[in-house]
Structures are given as structure tokens and as C-alpha cells.
Length: 114
Image: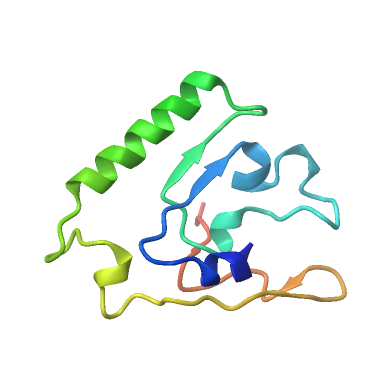
């Protein structure tokens, strides 16, 4: 997924569809399931559910459309493609002994402190 994201043309928008894409869902202990795609690439809209409801999908598209409409080409709210400090490519994780290495992109994902 990260390699595909790096190859996409700008502007890039990502929707995480379902519990498995957001957090790994009930299968997150498996060797073949990520713990959440937002650890590796920036996600614009999350759609919860397993499977997500059609209303949630429509709401996500409307939310993404509002985000795109509110963006300007200058200022704080400009897209990532127009920000000089934003990364354009992210490191592609490799298979480790027990998990993907790196396990997350520290510039994107910060663990919640409880």
C-alpha cells in the first residue's frame, strides 16, 4: 500500500474503509493484517464498521468533498502537494521476524497516551 501511495500523482486523498483498514479489526493479531494503515500513510477520512454501512460510505465521500472544497492553494489549509515541508514519499516497510519494520512512520502516527 505504501509503495502504491508513493507512486500516485498529487493530490492524494485516502479513505480507510472498514475496521480492518483502520485498526486491524478482529484479525489484527494475524501475521498478514496491518494494525492500521494510518501508521504508514496519511488518511483523510476513516469509515468505521465491519462491513461499513452504505450511509457511512456516502457520509465519508461528502466529508472528503467538504475537505477538498475548503482547501486553498495558499495558507495553512492548502493540500499536502502544495506544502514545502510535507513529505512526498514514505518509507516502505519490510517484513521482519515478527512484524513489519518499521512498525510505523513516526512522523505520521503518534500513539495515544492513556
